[in-house]
Length: 193
Image 1 (cartoon, rainbow, N blue to C red):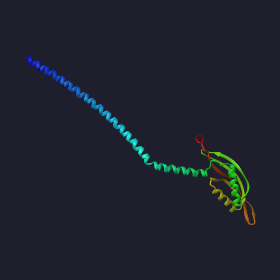
Image 2: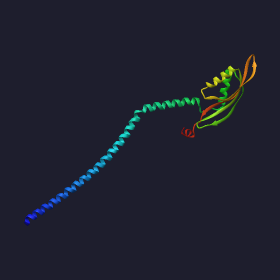
Image 3: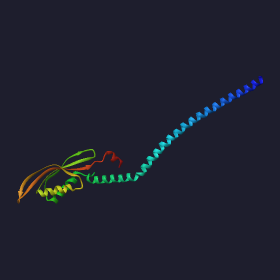
Image 4: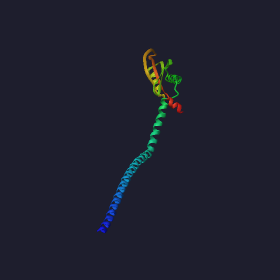
């Protein structure tokens, strides 16, 4: 019986050892699987994030031609705007242009003098006080010529009064303030150039 118990205790010890070994093995395998699953999830998240970045880059590349067309359109519009809102406009330029347009319309310039200038965010108003005499059609022609100048020129205020009647034609006197605009470069743009 002692032999039987010795054999049995060896088997019991062997069984306990086997059970402990199996428990340790499965525990470590389970822990390894959990770690592997966590690493796998992190890798999937990184792949998903990078796939989103790749898709965004593909969308930008796909729309590049559209963006270039839009950039060219805006650039052309800016060039056109600078024709009407020049950078290098001064009061003498305006006076010369007004004088030549008055002569072309047959209007008599009584007085023309630079007025005040006023700066805004990106442009400056250059005003000119004018006093003109002529027939209604001549004054209208002068205003028409002024409106066709490739610069923004407008009449801020005016007063139109009859002066004389010569040969049955009423002569009118126009007093007013003409305003031209010029583009002001920002200090940051001036530094970049």
